[in-house]
Image 1 (cartoon, helix red, strand yellow):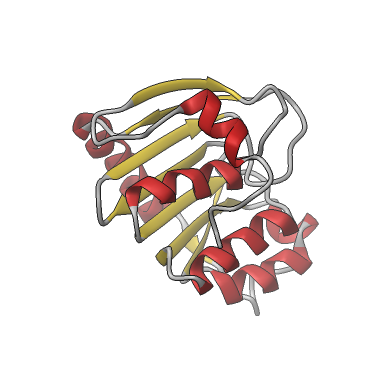
Image 2 (cartoon, rainbow, N blue to C red; image 1 turned 135 degrees about the vertical axis):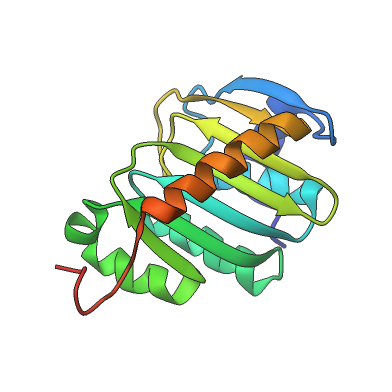
Amino acid sequence: MLFDFKHYNVIKEQIGEITDSSLIHFMTFGKWHSYELLYYLLSFTGKSNVTITTFGLSEEGLRSLQKAKNEGYINDLTMIINLSARVYKKKFMFYLKNVADTVLLQNIHAKLFIIEGENFNAIVNQSANFSTNPTNESGVISTMPNDIITYKDYINKTIKLSKQLNFSENVI
C-alpha cells in the first residue's frame, strides 16, 4: 500500500488534513522526505498527473515515483531536473527514463510539485530536493485556485525553456 510508509503519521500530525482550500507552511525538522510528502498529498488529491522540479534526486525518490505509478496513483509524471544531474547522477537518468513520462533538462534550482488530482489540485514550493534528506527543510503547500494557476503558469514557462532529455546527446 502506497500510503503505509515510515513517516506517514509524523507528516499527518504536523500537516493535518488537506482540503481544496488549504494553505500550509511547514518545516520537516529532518523527520521526513519530499517523496513522502508527495505520497501524503496523493492520499488526498487522488489519482493525479504530477510535475516535479528538482535540483537533485535520489534512488529512494525514484523508487517512490515508480511505486506510485505502478499502483496507479500517478497517471502522468513530468520531471524537470537541473542540467547538472545528467552528469553526476548518470545512473539515475536511465532509471528516470523508465519511470517518468517526460524528462526535461533546465538550469533550475526550484523544488516544486504540481499535483493535478481527481479530487483537487495542489502545489508544493519547498527547499528540499526529491531525495532522502535528514536536514531541516521548509515549504508551503497550497490548494488555493489562484496559487495553482500561478504555479502552473510558472511551470508552463519553464517547460518552454527546457530541453527534452535525449540519452544519446544529453547523458554524459
